[in-house]
Image (cartoon, rainbow, N blue to C red):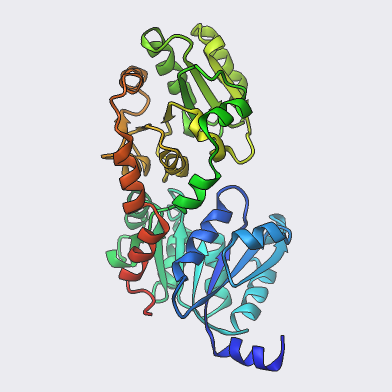
Length: 372
């Protein structure tokens, strides 16, 4: 960097985004928050606490600068003194207006390693149930504000931090770049060919870890109940891997539907193939949000979701909500989908209105936590 460029950089106001890592959905989380500042006077520097340097991650971060601290998970246990020193050095390197930190560990490092205002973004339930975390948040409450990815996560934090003003714990929904996701998604025919699915089958799709929280057992039971009334040759297709795979396969065998249930395992860039589905069903228990619902909506696929957690906020008014862990109500919902009773136009409208980058940008600036 030349002396002139350095002077310009130092005069420029910046936002420091601090992420634990970029695995799974968290690279797109970094992108989501970086683009909030598109068209504003601010530049964004994104720092990853863990993870090797990667040109692909740099491009996906949508940031003006990306820094990889390259710590291992073991190195950031306990007091994280090395990470705090590194963060302090970065925070002092230019004129940062604030820090946006994702998940508790980066919030902890950012507050101890700088005097910046910190916006802590939480993607899960229960982050402040521990008394030690409540004490920590209360100690730094003058310069800490909190965002939940859904009203359900927000309300969970408010319940754990009852002394906080409600306007300091708010919601900013997860979102997608709708046009970019749609451009990525291949046609129904291509998707089915890639996934090895018959072109003429009626297909129920599910994407997620094979884990108790995702409750694919209810999905299989509901599908088995509905199958006699579904189109001939209907399939349930599950993308994902996890410790319950053998147990779920055994359940499908016990219910006599093993020939109609396909376990595809982990599918790289799975959202590219959502048009393979005739309906997308998510039966999770207390899902904090449910990004896969947005990806299904972007594909124009009708969605069914269990009526709990953040998923209800995504689907309400634009899909079908069914009682959690109730196979019979799910079976009824699948039959309604097969009869074409779910309108996907309302999903497209809601996606644009509530869960797009533009909608999030407008919502963020109304919070008044950083004035333009």
